[in-house]
Length: 94
Image (tube, rainbow, N blue to C red; front, top):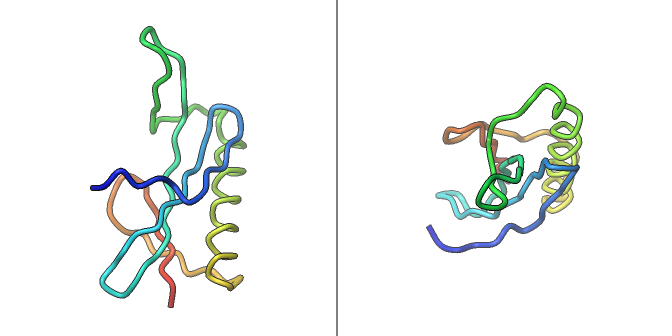
């Protein structure tokens, strides 16, 4: 994997959703990942585990990421397709 930077990042407190552009067999598509930052003994770290109190921030960040992806694709309808693992959802362009 390359050192690609996210196309966009949406944050709410310690929660962030990062949008990535990927190349697939049928063309480029966007996907997003979600993480929670925290300060440990050696500085800031990131986790894919969440607490109950993170629920609203998670929803907010995911909603923003999906809206951004749909805006880039120029449509308002859902086209989400689960791919891979780790809870990553990619939105495939038609």
